[in-house]
Length: 306
Ligand code: GDP
Picture (cartoon, rainbow, N blue to C red):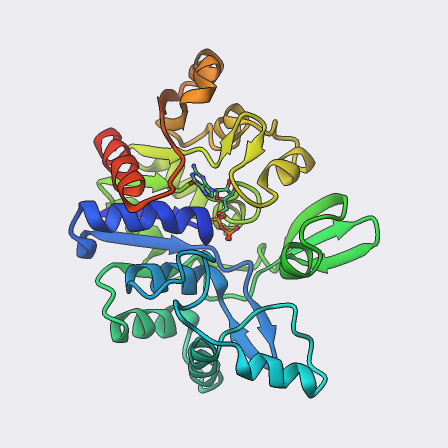
């Protein structure tokens, strides 16, 4: 079994490539859940949904989230009725959140609901939330503390950030199967996801980081940063806040205790010596994934390294 750790948008691109290159049943995915939030009374798990929709072939590839061809009539009506509309939830997408919320309210764990959801949508890969416990990324800005979705979607990641922390993480435990998957994987992939707010929370769930350090398998990462910028979103800004250089070398530094190899952009070849000083093999490649062919090619390169 190949194991991948991921957030939503960037990670999903590589996951799509991996699922096309190996038997999807051979792929297990640990997903960030610290972006989860309640909207209109519904439990929304954006990274899990992006990964399941991707693997089910249902993702709106252009937006990078939500269901392809979805409409937004319910959201518009909710807006007319005075609900906030900044977090976009499509009409069909709402069904996912309604069903998940009902199952959680009936006492099922997030891991059980996720497994049920991926099965009914025909996804062969196992999708594991990092934890069944409620963990929430909080962003401390000059104007006060807000949730990750408020920072990322409502404020379009423009406020200056002083601190990022994960409320509830200390008392959390990995969801069933997570530590076993790390132990049994024949290779582990850290997707090109935000090192602070996507991979960061997964590593911070007590026990997960240690399991990765102790793993006998190779752990191969792909940088979400080229030069000093993210390919999308605020990873480069947030890395600075957490004292990591915003570069592929900073990504290597953040994962240095468990990473075997890091795939970096050809543009960053010059960083190879400084990454290799950390004991990590640095392999340069085209890490931009703009097409299915790009995703599959990068997935093949990563699989060759694990
Ligand atoms: P989120 O949960 O939506 O924040 O999604 P992720 O954390 O999985 O993805 C965000 C990260 O993906 C950002 O840091 C981007 O730089 C990275 N990213 C987006 N597209 C690409 C790509 O084509 N290649 C690589 N290497 N990284 C990408």
